[in-house]
Image (cartoon, rainbow, N blue to C red; front, side):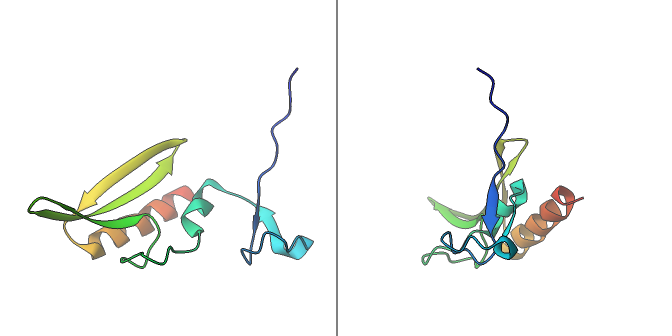
Length: 93
């Protein structure tokens, strides 16, 4: 059997029980970066993590592109944030 692709929706107010039409939108790949921040998030941004490996410390940005997970490391948090914003801009064009 062949099934058509199901549409994936996103709840604008992040309340999965609020299914009013005005609160629903088509989910884009970029929306995965819009999830609520975890309480232990130190960067203030989704996908940006501070990592310590031995004496080396760096900021890591992880994102999905063409359904593949990618990541890039940076020396400073601001470099990671700037790169994230550039990726978002490219993916929304």
